Length: 536
Image 1: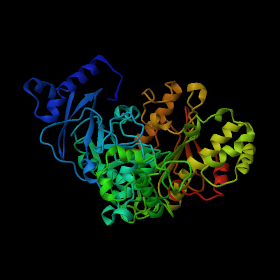
Image 2: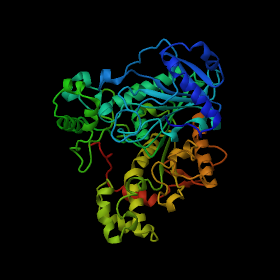
Image 3: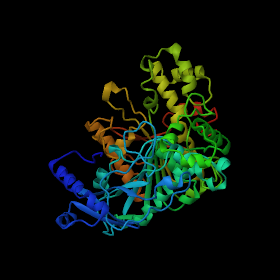
Image 4: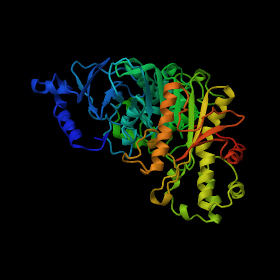
């Protein structure tokens, strides 16, 4: 079980007591000798529409883990989620629930993965706190809401807010498009992983008051794939009205896959499994489906099958951010952010990448840019812009601007053209660890926005400078959740993003507002078309 706070004698005592009563909590009323424990301040009981759940109070925060918001998906593979079965006796909510099955993960996995976790300062006190719902990254294929980095304790203390993290269906379980293989009963099969998030948000709406929150003030925030899920939800009719603010970090979804490419990918998975229809898929072992995610993508060379949202004209009736920003979300304030050195996370361990020679650079850029542009031209332009850069620094800067940052710019521009309230940021804080090799890479904003720089998995360090960056980002998130604007006293005035000035908050140990940072790089890559990789 992942820890949510450093081990201490008091915490150890609470855990031992909680685990000792876990069986009673799951299967029946607490025995008499546990009754005093259940009534103590260390124990928390909440009522959900499916039954009562028992969590713990740790460091003054009520923590509930693994609460079901949907039924076991093994019962209805590739179909929209349904309500969980009710339970009559208090259910243990002391440990994270299983992740969606996926390759190469150390956590427990199960198709019974529709569960969420809640951190709250108080229960049923009528305070109407902002509710912050976090969607994890990992494209639409991997990860879970159970990372130490997503622990909500410090946000609860800092901002008097409710924090929720979510597990849902991913990869082949959440995005295998079967409409043309299994018929209309599977029309939404390419989007059931996102429909799980709709179900989770519905659960949040219905239980916000019980957990001390305000159902009319829900902020969704997410990094990488989590941000892409949010962009998709912003265009999904079923999600309308379920959230009121959106904060995305290095995660965009401009276009969705179409039925052609999504069907080709589904057939590639079926071919690898050596099956031909829905019956066989429904009966297959979970492990067989996980193994099928290794199928070669028929539309992209050199990678396994891409899974993501599908333009099915049912659950998703338009592309998330094409040809314009989704009109249904025009009244939702949005923050769109990226990190200065995104691709150090993807290519930082490539052989020889930190010793790259100029004569090697163009060839290395050719496949890594993800847009079709002459790499020699890109190198020449970067050498004019940044004559002090090494070949390695040009590689990371160009691949970030052409690949990771490009979608963020497009979303911000479309929102600005729509006239909607949008704020942009760029994370410049560079990790000092390991000689600075991480830079401000993809994912660096997670421990900052959660104020969890000391948690396992953080690569930020715990210096005063890192904490100042965390203060700036986490307070901005809390202010945004509370008021719809990310302004707070520790950063300069953060103006909305417009096409006239492109105001962008540059987060660092000393944050500043800057108009159109990296504007020359933006203009360079605006000269070629952009289609989100995996959606063609």
